[in-house]
Structure formats: C-alpha cells, structure tokens
Image 1 (cartoon, rainbow, N blue to C red):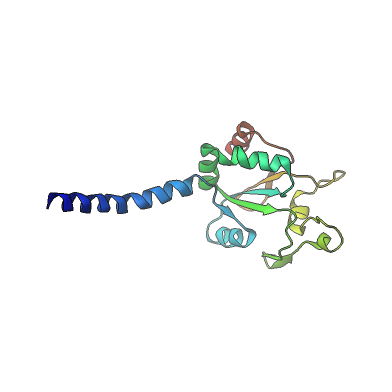
Image 2 (cartoon, rainbow, N blue to C red):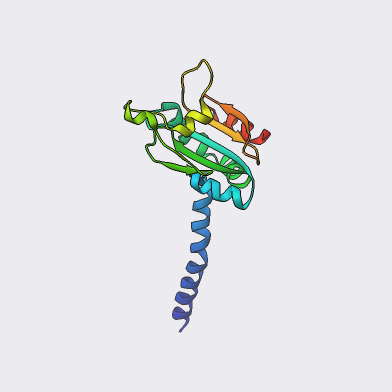
Length: 163
C-alpha cells in the first residue's frame, strides 16, 4: 500500500513539474515574431520593437545567434520589453504588413536578392546593404536606433537597455 502511494505521489509530482520544465525551456529563447504576427501584436498592445535582419551566410549573424541571443539577460529583456522580429533578409516570402504586400524583387534578377522590408528599413545612403542589421523602434513604430555591425553581448545589452 505504501509503495503504491509513493508511486502515485511521484506521478503527481511529475505532472506538476512538466509545466515548469516546459516554461523554463521557453524562457531560454527569444519569442521571435514574423511581420504578420508583429502587426497583430502592435494592434492589440503598442510596444517597442526589436528587428533583426540576418542571412544564412552571414558569419557575424551566426556569432550573435550563438552569443548575444543566447544570453539569459538579453532574452529576458527582449521578451519583456520588446516585440522581437527576426527576418532572413534574403527571404522570398510575400509578406503582408499594414495593408501592403512586400516581396523580394531582387530574387528575380539576383541569386541572393534582398527582400523589400529590409531594404526599406535598413538601407543607408552611400552604403551598400550589409548585415547584420538591428533596428529599435518605439511604440509608434518610429526608428530610434539602427545598428549595422556585429554586437557583442555587452553592446547588445547596452543597446536594448537604453531604449
């Protein structure tokens, strides 16, 4: 009888622990959104936005993924204070955002064309488009900061802490 009670207690504890374990795993990652999800989120509750443009071939992008974007403080700050959007700048997806369709016009003429959204938000006069790109926007979706370089974990934390 006592063994059965202990076994039942162990099963009960396991069921209590599973939600906690799955929650802790979720907290260890940034809640990345796409632009359609961002539009819905902004419509429900205005909030600052963190946008990260990358490409699969970008060495500095991969380095930030392995370092800054795995840092617990950065994950917590981005998940609590920002809507975080991550987009492959070479995506060939058509994206509907704010009543407009955006797509990769260059994909038709170039092997690795850049999508319209990163070109609109992250182009600089007299500079070629380059990655990685990080944008910070305020609650009204106005650009507050644009970074066009690899950010160390420390610099990333400084950037998101001042906004």
